[in-house]
Image 1 (cartoon, rainbow, N blue to C red):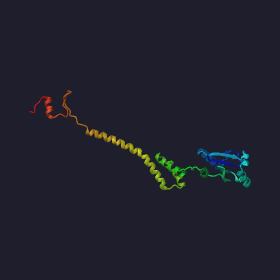
Image 2 (cartoon, rainbow, N blue to C red):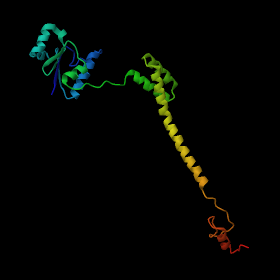
Image 3 (tube, rainbow, N blue to C red):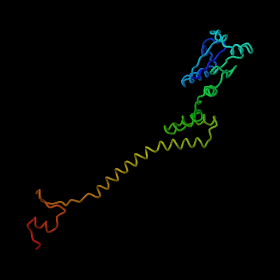
Length: 215
């Protein structure tokens, strides 16, 4: 198992992510280490203010401190080898040192989010929403062509179910009209008998049923 050991400068807590003003670098690095742990990497952190013995016992870290003082911290070691000193590495660097694939970059940028919002504004017929997100997208450098594509996509999605239900009603109504047009025409008779002649009987059969003659 890959082992990562981080020797931090003196901080108020184990990660430095505390207090009213949090250093964004520390917050990012803490999240990156959590990500490493989720990938099965062993991660340990040592704080100079609370664990000085760990610094003294590690020859390489002690040498870095003697040479640069606290400016040489943090020291990041991977499988016993110092990989960086004096700065917090990126997640991609940590992943490379640990021999695991880095996270795929997110496609959902701020500009993409505004294009999605423009599409949602079209779908919901919200004029204020469209104006607001149009302005934000323009400030982010989103092109007019991309905004038009977002509008066209939203409009297609919006109109597809409406067209589908219109097609459905048209099929039902055309079928009903066709069924009425093809229905047989029943001739009315004056007979009240259950044996009244039907339209399928020939003229001779009708005369026979009445007992009449052709003359």
